[in-house]
Length: 169
View (cartoon, rainbow, N blue to C red):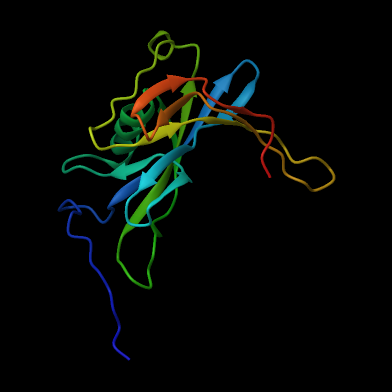
């Protein structure tokens, strides 16, 4: 049987990393929140929920890429707190890899009070927050969702506070 594979050709020279995934933690008086995003993905013709992510540009460190990508996709300004080892996305098919970069967002900073994503024309991305809670003794994980910004994929109009959900499975 012939092995089918693909090779990413956009990796900047001088680095062994294609991209970054960003675990963004908001620090609010009410507690910590995590920032995932909804994004339309043409290869699967679906909207997915994922962490913000992006490719490392030439001459950029992975920390710089994470800060830039998070600001472009959400408007948040952040500081890197840790990075993961190299992770391969689909090693049975492709050599694409990334590092998860954890960032901290101080919600008291003035530049975060009026955030504006800097999305590219063909980006269909909406970010939201999930309250970080410790699992109860019952062993069940709980999370509360609060949509901060939503993209209407039909009309391409961005709105605020378009959806709230009290919990997720």
